[in-house]
Amino acid sequence: ALREWLNVSQLDVRSVEGENIQAAVVPAAGVKCERCWRWEPTVGRHATHKTICARCVEAVATVPLSA
Image 1: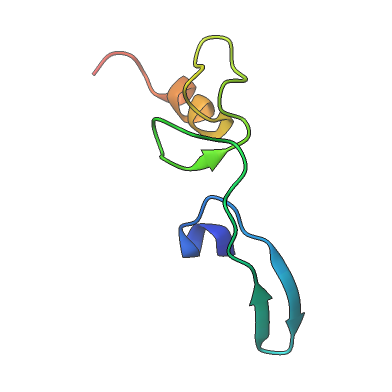
Image 2 (image 1 turned 135 degrees about the horizontal axis):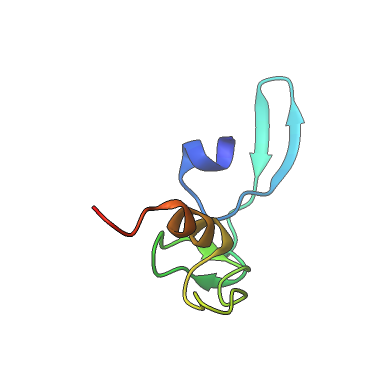
């Protein structure tokens, strides 16, 4: 999505008119994830992984522990 392409923590598109897009630059909500460095409101919500966001919790859970 556009958020990934721009590599930003959060994106708030104010309006779209044809090829013109208006967006605002404001501080992101949440806490900085230690793994991906994005500011996310989901950081701290997982009991085992309190310092990473929900997206990273999912990624860590799918990685095998043995090499």
